Length: 309
Image (cartoon, rainbow, N blue to C red; front, side):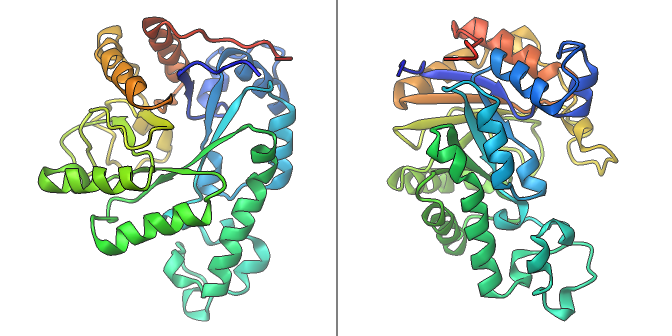
């Protein structure tokens, strides 16, 4: 098995409709299968975004692994319910919806705290089972937990991170915070020490600044095995707007100078972790694929794979 390069670059979606409309895919790539095969011939990794809105299925995992080269890697975004975000009630497994207590039925949003313990256990179990085909084939990267803005530094929060890591111990997780207090003042070192102690990668980010959710655009390595980086764009105007299309929040194409500033940061991470995976999450039109290609060139990272390798 060929050794993977220490830095790999991809995007946080291959199915976004404005990407499909942008011309990135060949005209004859009209099916989901053809588009994934094309994407996997260009980039070695991807982050699956759809699993945040609806939990993954074993069937999809099998299809994904069948449609990609041997060394392709899928990072999976954790289901919103398991990250303590609110989610649509109809996203929960149909039979489990029947176990939602009466006082929470009919609500527009469902929270983990609304569910009985046995239902929570089953949701975790099914989430993990759905990823097992990818894991068994060696194509599963990590499960990415993006926590909500109200997930603040506390003993309870740290315990929950450890619970997530324990429940998915076969796979491994990375965590992304959306509250700047995790990386502010003395709390920053406590956060980093906690994650280093448990070898849980923190997600380094580039994102709009000046908000409660804004984290510093700095490289943080908390795992010897993997450092994880996400680029969200810098669309400050749309960042906290309630938009009909969430994609518009990420409608930002980085300039070459903005990407160049991250080159030494990513190289620094590569000196501290065996692998650095960089995901462009500015998934509007072809912005992410263009920026991923540009950044790869700056870092000297080769893209493109032999479909049979």
